[in-house]
Image (cartoon, rainbow, N blue to C red):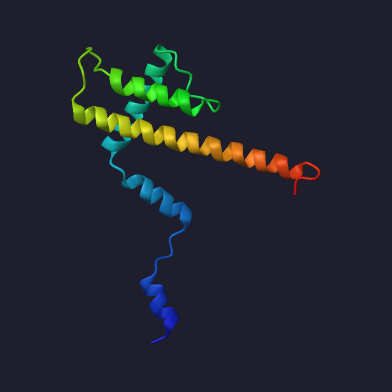
Length: 124
């Protein structure tokens, strides 16, 4: 049997675009809704408490303070405390979002710093 024939049977030919679409569809709608709702609540909390962390210039310290306050002060819409499991879930969703955004901002800043320092005379 020809090796190329076996390879064509064994390995799929999906494009990266198609793979991205299919993997995005794997997440249950409930999970997507939970993440969106949690993020909307975090944004509303930050606005109400005047934490300016939803921008690219937010410091790590200001985000940490907002997260600490968010974890301690999150309540149901009726003012009651959330159950511990809900608080942990909401904290993790928010922390992942903040980590991803802060990391991306730091990578962008580091890249800009490296580009500017390499473009200066005598800085090679």
